[in-house]
Length: 338
Length: 269
Image 1 (cartoon, rainbow over the protein chains, first blue to last red):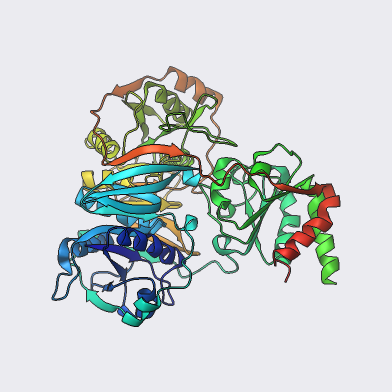
Image 2: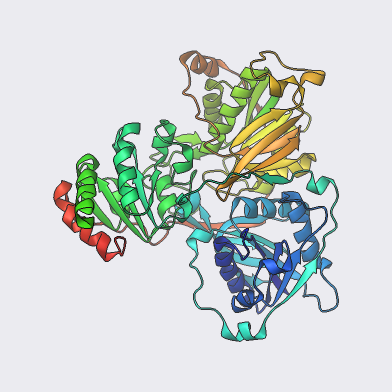
């Protein structure tokens, strides 16, 4: 049997970080039942480095392509994975039957696996943090609810387990497998049979791309909440973020009030961040906000209320008014810089 | 345009979340209820569309009798009609939920079915996609920009009557964020679309809206339950929560300690 992991790829080649983390969860699932780990992606065979795959434990890989695919097409991607899972790649030397399809819980991963669930009539478990096979057609898994504020222990009964992985809650695998790297991995090409209907919904990606540091990948995020008091209060937070080489993120109330654009929102309905430092200023710490910043290595809260939930969830706290603390911090950093 | 928006009643959770002693549910003894934030935006989007193009917004929910409160909340925002797929309060999985919704909307004459991208509580990310398959409609998810194309509905945003025949919009251009850029889907109507918060800023309910919602008749249907093959065993709070922060100090007196900490964390190097 084989656990098949869908990889999303970077424009410049290689699997995206979320897919690399997902591969680690897929590998654990495969080894829980002595199964083989396989990977598949859409694009040319050269888009992912075979050596990197081998060291991640991948034994087989498929690069999926079709003349009909002119871009990301959710239904077509799901049809291709359904074809691969049903033995469509069962050429000479093809892998054993597929027992699970695993993807990162990105917009695309969740969407494609939902389509795959609908096509196959099987259940799909989104935002898993771990999974293990407990019997034929049965997996035990842990998945996030409330974007990670709660965990659910669940049992999935299906001949083909469909899972997405909450990649921000999974460690980046370290090191790699030297033996696997030496063994290498053969990358085959797979051309799915697709209809016009399968590609009727196809994405066109805009040419313009937001430049600068992205909130999702920033090393430092300076967060502002209701305590900032209004749109004009963010100038000093921007200044601090600039000094620390980071960006500003905000809580939901800030975007609901229209003080800042929604794309700056950190939280369950905004962006999930994984910085080295999250400096949360004037943010009470509702669970929906914490769901977005629980991936931060260190959280420092600045809040007037020592009883605010964020103080219980942060690593460090300064009890005080951000309107005094932040300008003083900016001044101290400027002085230090000389 | 005839639009149906599906919403879900979820606990209004603030600073903490707790689980009932049997591990089966979120403890709601201290909380009110709301709809998932993405869905509130879906309703706002639908109301804005019908304000421009005319038509009707139907809000639909599957839940216990009390979920009628959330339908009334959405009627107060400007939706026209509320339909409750009434359950006994047991949690329905995504497969059964999608089947029940598809059954009800199948012959409803809707040109657009709107959903939130995922429910705030269960986060299953699949009901809209499953509904689209059951109805044979195209589907796009995670949408943060929705425009119409074809017919006059797309080119004349101030039209205040329902465009019919050749004038009705035929397609949507639906955009979502993709790694710092926007990916845009050109989709024929009727279609299933799930949206994310940020697509608009939902309005506050007006007083006349509230009064209208209070008097509205909620249509009730009782769908047949089917168990999901993804079985919840128990819910739990992650082990990491519940620590206390180390307090660095009070007010700007804490700044030297804060600078030392940033230095220690390697942020200043």
